[in-house]
Image (cartoon, each protein chain N blue to C red):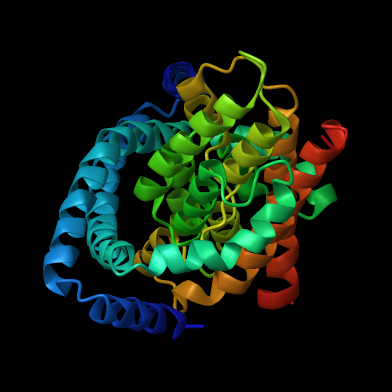
Length: 191
Length: 170
């Protein structure tokens, strides 16, 4: 998918640029793009390193574990079929709390193990169960509480209040997640 | 709102102290992992940002924006964020490239910049997540996963614009 998009982007720009006679701008675009991306990476570097460090402390200090305990009543409503103390349930709540904290690196391994557990509980071989769909939809929606990367980028581009967007991010994430889960449950016929 | 981050870090540190975590060692271990993350995204970002910058320089983005702006205006969307809405579910790096492009052109605190920020913060790379999660367990028939996930993405776009209109740019 990404391979085609990359190819298409470059071909479209080359063709459009030539038709519109913007060869020199196009050449400048190539140079700017390369320079811009490195500038962007250096801005992101500080934030990624700092936040990864803080989150490692959060992991080891048991913060994630406490959060997943807080979340489990809500998750039990979404995954009614799963026994409350099952391994699947525990992995799902670890995945969701890691996602909330923006620990993408920690969330994915929990999530993959959770999928393996859900697969074990599902009778059909290559077909997604209702619980799998619910779980994957939760992971395609962003539920991160602190979008630190976006904050850092906003600051780099001169925002006076980088985190002024937080309430809006929370509202639209919550609405998006609700919409996704509702559609998932409706199509699933309540199963 | 600005207090949220320092407060959060303080709570994490308190947890660490209670659990007797070697704070600085844990921090540096985590940050070292962060370097891997950073190096992991570097090639993607360089490639896609260059491609998007070329697209802008060639004038193709303007043509696309002019083409969709009537529909965008109908929904009350700033037309600059439309390409980002389309690319967001497919490519994280590509939409970051468009995001910084919007910041550069319109400003991070402009209406379009704020909408794009909220959109980026409330969506994920949908197709990537679906591929990784189902791929890992060999599930091929994903039933109604995609319509559900994409309706979440669409809701996020609508709500991003709406919430910025209500709370930040009334």
